[in-house]
Amino acid sequence: ATPMSIMVGVGRGAQIGVLIKDAAALERLQAVDTVVVDKTGTLTEGKPTLSRVASVGELADNELLRLAAAVEAASEHPLARAIVDGAEARKLRLPKAQQFYSDPGLGVWGQIDGQRIAVGNRRLAEREGASLGRVGDEAAQAQARGSTVVYVLHDSALAGYLLIEDSIKSSTPAALQALRKAGVRVIMLTGDDQATAEHVGRELGLDEVVANVLPQDKASTIERLQREGRVVAMAGDGVNDAPALARADVGIAMGGGADVAMESAGVTLMRGDLGGIAQAISLSRKTLRNIR
Ligand code: ADP
Ligand code: MG
Image (tube, rainbow, N blue to C red; front, side, top):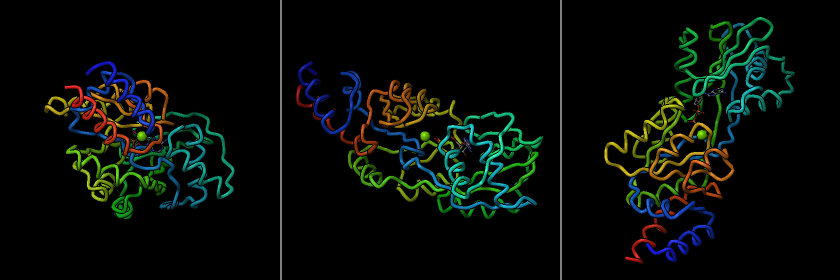
């Protein structure tokens, strides 16, 4: 490609809110045959809301939520914000957690008045040694509808669970269709549970879902696809997506996401609209075709 045609291509992208970092990123885009997308904040709005509080033990629902929110108050995860906002909407006063630990990809835990409160996914519950018992069924049904289940453990016993909803961005279905039309395979990568991930995958007609992925394993999933001969673009918004964005042939960050994600990426979608991915690929294919 001539420097001139590259400049024109990059300029066209900028006009439609697709920022392409350099010539190398524009050139690599044309060969992309697989797009890997993070779920939360990329396919979805990333503004999850609390929809249900279900105690299964002695704690009243409000007490369960109050303790969970007190621990989550120290976390920056979008699910944490949903839980704290939910508690505030119910006018609950949050006690102060004495200690706080976060386990990326699992959840958080802390100490409140000598009680150990852990809040997170199935993997966290299992690590705490809690048995999910009959709750498993009810939670599974919610997951099959696409809700995220967050378990609350009280001194390592299951105290209840919270349901959280995060709607699909309205621009997502059309964006995925444009990618399919361009002959690109779309794979969702998420730290969420298998059941929730599969529901979203079916609803959106994705080619594959990879669930239960720990943040540190996102990049190795990209490497596996590359070893299979695929040219991979990865789209994500979070701090924990940065290594995978850097590993991908083309990293695609969401404008408004974490700064480190944008720094690791070759493309930034300023409008947070995934439609920009197909547009970027098409721009690259046209730019490179024109000058040959
Ligand atoms: P994603 O890949 O969807 O962006 P993350 O890797 O950030 O997700 O988190 C993966 C999973 O870990 C979440 O779906 C949730 O089950 C659990 N988790 C992480 N942080 C928290 C938290 N602060 N509170 C509750 N659960 C959490
Ligand atoms: Mg994310």
